[in-house]
View 1 (cartoon, rainbow, N blue to C red):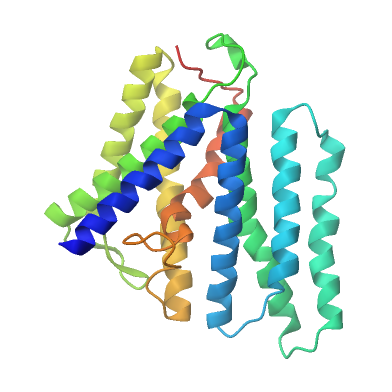
View 2 (view 1 turned 30 degrees about the vertical axis):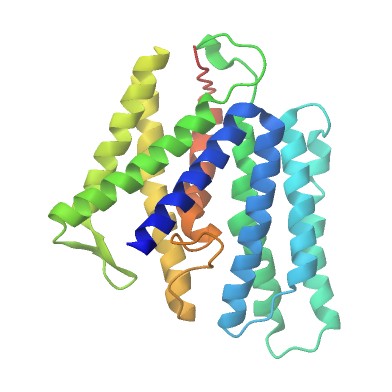
Length: 283
């Protein structure tokens, strides 16, 4: 009973902070996901250490923070131009070069995991800042200033998928989805999550009087790649022999446990939005 109460309180605080930052402004979003990305990066490096590797934690965390700042400021459209994005590659190369000055039995895996941490955690989370862009693509709707709908919808659909998968899996789950990596996930749960996610997409389409097809596609991208992100994180944890990525969120595990689906789905949703020049603004 106590564990359920702790889990509920943690979940309530987590959702309140996340929604509050999203609704407030783009700067609160930037700060929130900067903190999340740094905590997630630290968790990732700790997992790698449990696997016997020694990534360059401090330097990689600093590099990750700089890369997050560059991408985020570029998303604002006022402080950083495209040319600054070119600094990302030299910063990643720096992690490779620094390994030359360390004595290690596994130098390649060390710098590989240092770079992987940034690619896996920091860059996807920094992309969330683009969900609040201000341009009115395709004249779908007109709105000047900060728009939080896309980012809010992204997380609500993600949560709908997770909730639907959990409920459906508990009620109807029989056929294992990927037993080797995650024994508790079932096809029935995955289908239930998809249904919940698409319903959430329909609700956003209806309340904003926008294109239903786009919302369905966005929902499906979140379902497919969110599930793959979940399975990938499960594979990482299983490979190093841990149940949770961390314990920063009592009853819920670590940052990576809460954002595993986001790390994979965010880049694909953002790519879709920009490929088809879609901007769905609220009201």
